[in-house]
Length: 364
Image (cartoon, rainbow, N blue to C red; front, side, top):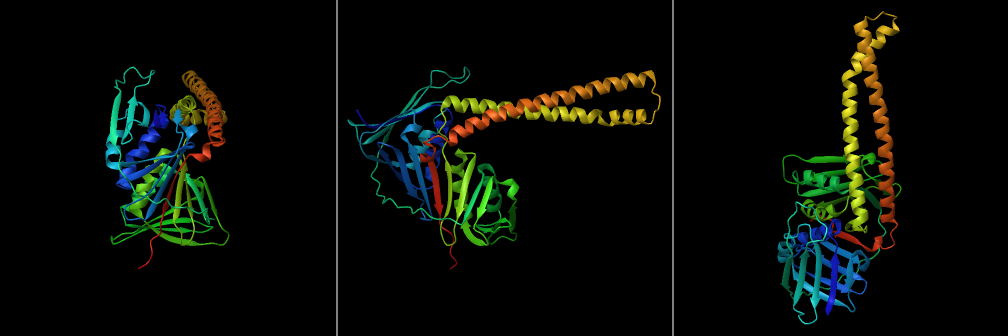
């Protein structure tokens, strides 16, 4: 019998689970994890007590989850990082036995179906639990003034670039623009203006201008966690911590694999279109030259006529192929949207999230 038992399927979910545990050591030395009948939760603050991490995974997110009564464990984050470095294509089991309450068992198990060229072995770890004193914070439902949704990769890229030019990040939000400024002791400052077309959505209270400053290093640490999702949400309110959050994928392994397969097809099709466009560009000038001569009623030689007919045939084939590919791409995107919608409308989706609250810098 176990105090709790959970299993995470191999694939995207195991990668998400591993990614979170591997980056905890950048936040704190240890963490207290809470298990209830409804799922797993954790909350911790970084060492300077400037930002708070909150994670929740509903029991339905796991392949298997059993916990009959409230149970907590304390773990060393540096050691858990080393353990999850050993995961490679496995599915995950984690439990504490009632016969051995002082140790956490983590098993990385080779799935039955796996790529032929991937040779992996089952791995078992026994981690000594530690006493962690942590008073859980109550987080109020704040009414934020700014709501930004954007792709996580561009958030990380932008924060990384700005960090090279200053320790502090100034965020200016208005109805007209979102501007990020790096400030510090360097000889150069960097400013970035986000166009509304380049982000997913943006809302701000009417007539409001907000100017707040945050530590660039901490934003970069938070950004590393946000790689678990393609999209993140940023909420800002004057004189309050910035909220950076993402929902955690709730799709099954089967649906995730379908989505990734469609995504690969979409990328291949996009490359095929670019190749065809390049091919079309190569014959465009010659084709237009012949068309101009024909329009002027200039008589073409047999050789030129044959060359024109050949080029015209190739051109029509390219245009036809591009149109076919576009139709195929639209069908693929429609199927991807259906899977994404299924994830969004999943009733447990909003129960699986990772949230950070980072305090603004205060002028001394």
